[in-house]
Length: 310
Image 1 (cartoon, helix red, strand yellow):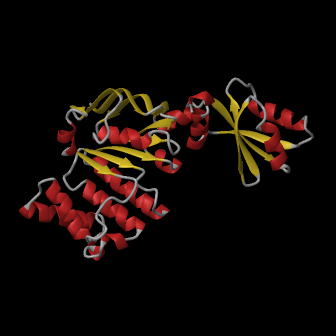
Image 2 (spheres, one colour):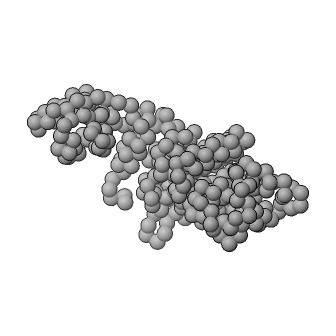
């Protein structure tokens, strides 16, 4: 069953195409990720899916509703967490949750019970009377998530929700997301963190408004269109200079005293190709083919579009 079905979704701002003919199929109970650099169209897409921004073209069906025509009805079924902190900074934790509960028409005993449930679940008890503008990044994040799910929405849209918190808060946040998924919530989350993208059930990589890859992280890494070779040499900088000039090389990254090299899939015996190339430049190296990670996939996927499409 599809929670989100999108066909040919596009959005232009003047002469700039922010989202270009995007198709999406997101199943109920799935964590679906958007991975991409700043300006690739992640936030614009999420705002269109929320009904906050009208598409220039395309069809959007979310939870059986046609968007943007039925955007008001969709608001009752979705929770939206923006990249920047969007709650009232001059209200305390409980006051913010009370306000959000009233927006979604929760009242009386049901409202009180739901707020107390969320305060306990997201560890807000010790700060319940603290002004939200004075909270730490992790505390604001937990409060924002509590506010987004206060009406128990079946769909949660998260726009880079962990961009301003520490690694431990990020891990705790993702544990909270998987608890929601176990309860049947569908989650669409944008990120630029590779470790977060790898947690998603399915992942779309966006680049310059286009979807350039879409599958499970495991399948994306398995099917990468490149050989991944780890190179150890005493002359790392010189080896990098030589390799990154070759048309067969899709990317070279220095990791400490070694290089991680992406070689075109058409090259046979990628390790031998690298060793022989470096030897011809009087450089000695040990080259070993290794498994791809998601960063390798990202590099290959986002370099596949011609530069003229920027």
